[in-house]
Amino acid sequence: MNSVRAPRDQAIVAESPQLVPRTFVPAAALVVLTHTVVMLVHGAAHMRLNVELSAWADLYVLCIIGTGPIAGFFLLRSRRQRTGATILFATMIGALLFGLWNHFIAHGPDHIMHLQAVAWRLPFQATAVLLAVSELAGAIGALMLRYSLTRQTKARNR
Picture (spheres, rainbow, N blue to C red):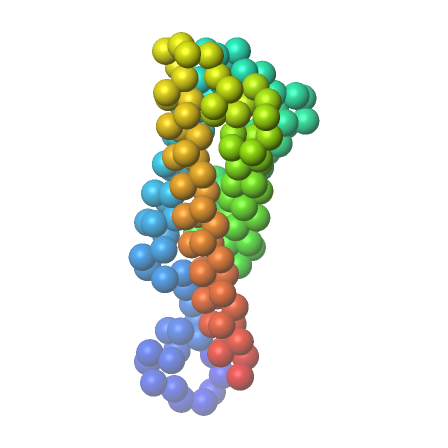
């Protein structure tokens, strides 16, 4: 701190890192946790139904859909909050687009309406929808947070 006197609350703000709104961290944790659990159940349904992905799709699922949101969340809890929000947004949008294409648009073995009528069909379909919902929620929340953090930075720099 410099030698200019400031009220106590200004000193606290000046010394602290960017602050994520208090309600966002638990919400982000809930979305990322839900997404991860649903993704694991969806992966089990993939295996039970023998719906295989290509090698590049497996890598995409592992890096972008699986690990990316978790990494983004942990960065939100560090001093790299804007980076965390950006990674969370990018991976959730990437996961959403991948899932929408493969589960609802492209006519292939991963399409929710082209599955065999067996026991794991309904869990596959339900988790495909739940993944889309969690990914959309995560992307919107991360975008809102990124915007908020950018505004905080600009306000501090004035």
